[in-house]
Length: 352
Image (tube, rainbow, N blue to C red; front, side, top):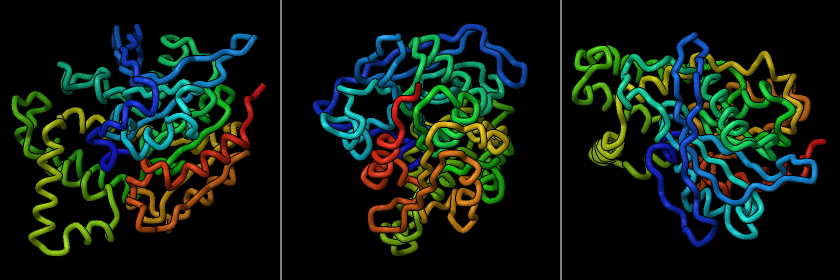
């Protein structure tokens, strides 16, 4: 998710669903894939609703929703997502489901470089982030089963990893705006561009800067560039002056909250993402949704359409370009894909 829904949270109407509860889980002796360790890793999270168990003690209504790069769990508390899904009678009615919205490692209020370790923070990857999510669910929340795992962008990639790493733990998987292959091609290029802009800026000072380095502005501009689709960008900026004004305003808004080390780590974390070797292990029904106007996961690559055949109960959906789609940001607009989610839940009963 990042960007269109990832850089700023917009509150949905609180009356539509129960008030979110916020807390921190402290994961002791967390070891990263690199061998680095933290004696305590803090994972911030929000929950909405009440946990339910069957007679055997198995949780039956837990839904894990995972955010995108530079985002946080609170980004989902916006009208077009929570306001369309969590209300009474809606698809993920929070009076029926127990919704879990974690902040990933390096994001939101979870442990991150800007807390104090700066560039000495462990070099976390996506597999570390999924490992922390699993410990949050099983240790802190004492949940032994998930009804659904879903996510947007980076969260979508985490969803693919969940399916291959913990195949029996959930009933259904719903990755949005993602591909089941390692980061490569243009997807790697724009990420490397951001990382280089920060690392090569002399004001970065190996991560020990006192004011944000200028390269962070380039990062904010690149994030803005990748978020939407060309049609919308042309409508909002039909002249050269409009384009400069829109870009400057978007970057300025992002720079109010972004930190260079946090952004650098968040983009670098994708280096170990590769669910490909485990696609055949995904046993839960899975529906992957991408949009035709997504610059990060363009349909002409054909990757999702090819790889989905390796998932035993997998199905791929491509949303066509419309006046309602928002490029990569389409992942946070539930009206575009909630019918597919409804069908997935109907086709995925509680697993024995």
